[in-house]
Image 1 (cartoon, one colour):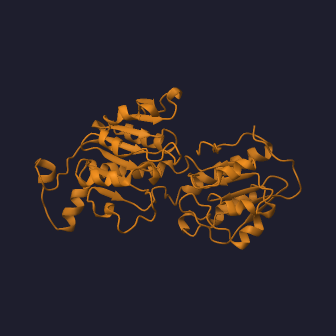
Image 2 (cartoon, rainbow, N blue to C red):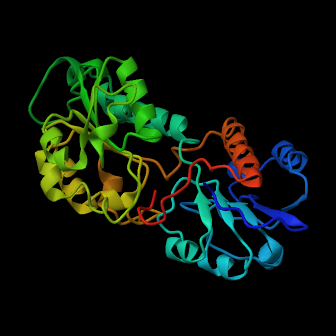
Image 3 (cartoon, rainbow, N blue to C red):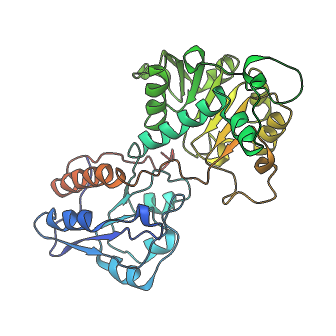
Length: 357
């Protein structure tokens, strides 16, 4: 059961969602819904100071926010920083509108027995569509098509005439591919559902495989079987969170286990991949391509060799963007959790502060 502190007059929710990135900012309609949904005895304070929604959020503490959270029981923002925690002595629950928690002060939250819930699953659909679109980009040779278009070149050979040297589109169908997906919740499940709809065979990898295979997966294996399935991966999708266990998951040795011509898509966190080793394999042409939305350092430095590789599709950590749908998914999750919290019921999307997801 979720432990709720004794009721007191003026229970306060502080909402810190005025994102500088306007497509992530709480809109007026959603703000009104929050105010109207307040349970009896609650007040809602919506902070006007712009907030940072990038990455895991939780970066800065503006004076307005610091003053607001002094009496806050619940904080709804993009992550939370340790500095903000220090200004919120009665805080009991943090709802993050971000999915990642890798950079959040989990030890400090645990020490104060503060619940942390996240947005896991809310952004799964746009991220999954981004991944599938990127995979199809390489399977259908769109990278070659873009290069030809820029050069005003009409050349069918890369698609119809295999050749040594030069660009080869190596066209394939997604339905003939085996897709290995590391992480089978949320994003991973949404990727599997879409790839399976194309006819692909999806193999999931998770810490514990005893739960069986969710819809879309032909089978799920435990993390210690990752090496065994990498050799079968026409496509490898990384959809795992950033934790101590996943850091450097796709290292040089494991990249070497992938078949020649495999495609790698990273929709998790940049820390999952050995970028120099991946760059080397891509530059040598051993991998067909990489779909990368997250990186070890963000923004990706201009000096990174990844920028110059034609078989890399780079996006600036935007795969979750879905302006018309985000709040229609995020707000119901929070409102349900707020009702649960008020009633003392178990919360959804509770983060295991030790495991990191």
